[in-house]
Amino acid sequence: MTEEATRRQIRRALVSVYDKTGLVDLVRALHGHGVEIVSTGSTAAAIEAAGVPVTPVERVTGFPECLGGRVKTLHPAVHAGLLADLRQPSHAEQLAELGIAPFDLLVSNLYPFTETVRSGAGIDECVEQIDIGGPAMVRAAAKNYNNVAVVTAPSAYPEVARALAAGGFTLAQRAALAARAFADIAEYDVAVANWFASTVVAPPEPTDPGAGRWPEFAGLALRVAKTLRYGENPHQAAALYTDPDAPPGLAQAEQVHGKEMSYNNYVDADAAWRAANDFAQPCVAIIKHANPCGIAIGTDVAEAHRKAHACDPLSAFGGVIAVNRPVSVAMAEQVAEVFTEVVVAPGYEPGALDILTRKKGIRLLRAPAWSPPPVEWRQVGGGVLVQTSDRVDAPGDDPAAWRLVAGPAATEEVVRDLAFAWRAVRAVKSNAILLASGGATVGVGMGQVNRVDAARLAVARAGAERASGAVAASDAFFPFPDGLLVLAEAGVRAVVQPGGSVRDEEVIAAADAAGITMYLTGTRHFFH
Image (cartoon, rainbow, N blue to C red):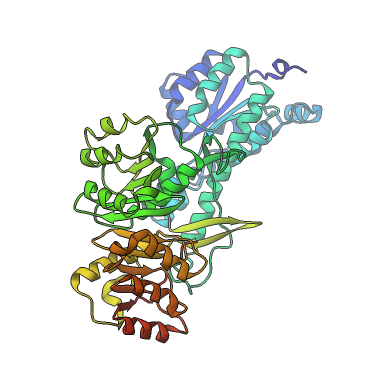
């Protein structure tokens, strides 16, 4: 059988939609091609108001809508018409015996459950937006795609118009519509299940690591946004998916200039955006291979960029820059002087884009307001690890709660640098040692398998002149004094670290002997 031979003429349609965008044009097109339209409640009223003949669903079922509209279409006269497989003579015979006419098209979209939840509505109001009849009809029609076409979004209405003109949908078209419908239902069900488990059942707050349980089910419903050129390497295929149920983030950023983003561009841009938004002050983070080349704060973004770039100009070449304020003209002029892969910002001041868009190779993203997800997912073989997102918001992240264990109390200026270093080190892959001075990183030791090498790398990147007099942050405790001694020999004046090692006293004694001020936070920020 040819594809053309699989077209099924649309003679009878069931239309029941919450979102009435494009409804009038759709039903006028259906009526213009002689299609009988059956509809429900407010949809039927809107169709009638448009002057298009419509059969109310209660005339088909012989039963009125009830329970405040909760029950409208849950009836054999509706579902038999959607589920009858007319390729089977017995189905056609039964429909005739029961006096039920089949449907060739279902147009249905669902109650706005996710939107209602996002609005901050109460539990009862959200529960009322859990659609029952809509998903049941959509599943029925999608299951019966051999006979019925199902349309679940106004964006697909032009497909209906084209199908009417062509004499109906082909089997391939009906299958594609069914796949889209099943995906819509799955996304809807995941949103309801996640919300119900987290809100109605209300498990203990996951921000407390020792609290209660996690939901027995957790789901993600993702939609493909774009196909990427390739993955981490050219032989790997890749795509970007978005989560409609999550706050918008880097995946929803608007690209205002440059060639397509790559997989690695997204990974680095996300790390940079995360690092820059750890600070309330104007901040710039320059990232390479998901690690900072430099992070700095300043009185404005241009100053922050100058300081961040100065940390490691060699590594910053070809890096990804994120800034937590709109890019100014002064910053744009500085960025334009250095080869940069991506800039991520909440916006661009007048004139800044004119400067940056002269660079053909640079990608410019305008990101939504920073809204970090409450939990993080990481795939492992056969499953997924889930954890609450790491933020610099634990009690030990407040310098006022730090415990001075060695050396003299730091001056206000040194405490500011220690606070900056502690906040910045969270963005560095473990094991991590970060040197800072004047609200900027001066040396970063990242991703090492021991803390001694991380300290050596940070000192080497800083150089003798910048390391001397700098402060240091360690993302986790020093297991031995050796790593601390590397910093002491370089002239580091103060160190902030979590503490918690069985050899803390040895490390503290080494700091005291070297005349180094040391604070313990009691909080760790591993970043693997």
